[in-house]
Image (cartoon, rainbow, N blue to C red):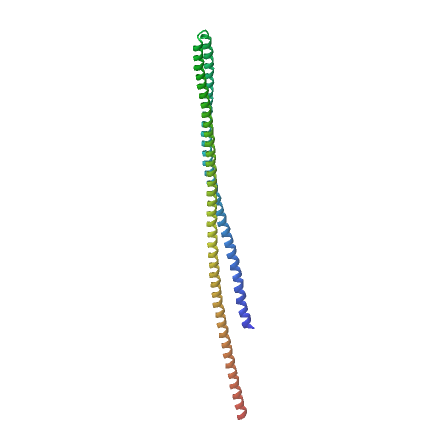
Length: 248
């Protein structure tokens, strides 16, 4: 019973020490992991904020410059178109006025001269109308060119926006990979530390149990030796008493 009680006491003490050590390690590692995760999260948030602010500023400057250039070109084309239309109309009006004045001035001349004048004027009017048509076509071509430029600028802006989004996703993915790798490394290190701590506690407990068993064996041996000595002494006393009785 004493040996069982002595063996049960160290085992219960070892179990209690092990439970306390596990609770302390668990609470410490949980607090450390929480603090490290909060720090990594704050760093990732700050990096993403700076990156988005920089990308948004660049995109806004590019859009502003593109819109200004497009507006300037459209205004220039519109002004040129109005100028050429006004000039063509003025030329037509001048030609009509001149034609009327010439007709009134040369009304009394020969029919051949009138025919020649009419042919010349018709040719001039045809030329003016052709120039007006060419000017109108040129204005339409310039407007179509401005439309193409606008379409190209919008396409470029959309491509830059998509590229910026891809870069943001890549940066977030890299941060997540780094955080996962750090978390896995910490978990492996913690498991190694737990295993080493458990091994140390087990070795200490085994040494303690071995020392207890050795002490118990020594006590048992001393007790057996003492009992043997007492028994021998009793037997010797009994022999002496027997001899006294025989002699008496």
